[in-house]
Amino acid sequence: MKSKNYIYQVTSLLILSVMSFMGITSCSVSDNSIIDNDSQSAVTNITADVYGGFYEIDLTEFGDTRNWTATYDADWLTVVDSKHEKNASLKVFVEANFDGTSRSAKIIVQNGGKCKEVAVTQEYPVMNDVLYPYFARGAADAVPGTTCAFRVVGNWYDASRGAEIADAMAQAGIDVAMPICGGAAQGVLASARESGMKLAFIDENSFAKAPGTVISSCSTEQRKAARETTLAFLEGRTAWGTTRTVGLQEGYITFIQDDPLYEAAVPAEVRFQMAALVQALLDGSRTVPAL
Image 1 (cartoon, one colour):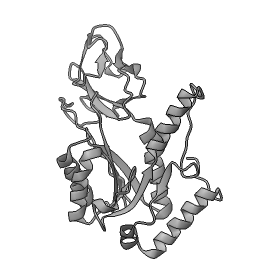
Image 2 (cartoon, rainbow, N blue to C red):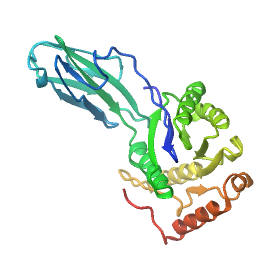
Image 3 (cartoon, rainbow, N blue to C red):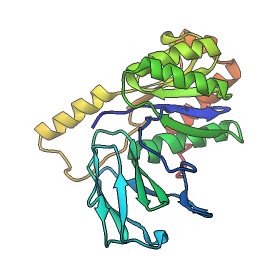
């Protein structure tokens, strides 16, 4: 599977994420409908986890379920029987996806004059369960009424695509974007410099990438994590079958506060508030709320 990327989009503190597009013939009325002459109802979706597996979609709403055909254009899913004369359900197999990215596709099911679109997505749990919801929560806590969303670029290198989506987001009124898209972030940076949209970065100190445009940056100590994990294995201390979550208190994440470019880009009042928040998280007087 080809890796994807994200750019977060927040409206008023916006997460922008970049969405991949699949080319496939659509049903004749709308992208999210079942057309049955005078009636129409909502599309049915499949959301698979990273392990994939078999999924079924009920086709009884077609009425006559003896003759239907299904078409799709993704190589990571399979309609078990794309043309069947008896089954009243659509059986779909989704392959496992362990590279930490999301992907999407569309299945078109037709039976005579009726058409059903099935959106299939396989999501990145860390994005859906941690990065996105906590970014959205933080943005809303900072500015009540803030809304967030994300899109997927489709790879880690397409700077032109990153710029195209960032341009559209800026025109839609997005104030702040957080790109998680590798080399495609260069396009986001270029777009933000032109539009005035602000950016937040993670993984490393990124203020110098666009002074005055980048207003927030964290570093993650991945080398420290790799070293400790490797030593634990060599010394026979690996706790197999378990996971460990670490953050600021354990020294794996640093919110950059001492860069002069941060001081120049962010008002003193906001910097003082951030310093107090980071210290509270470090000393345990404040904890990250569960969602």
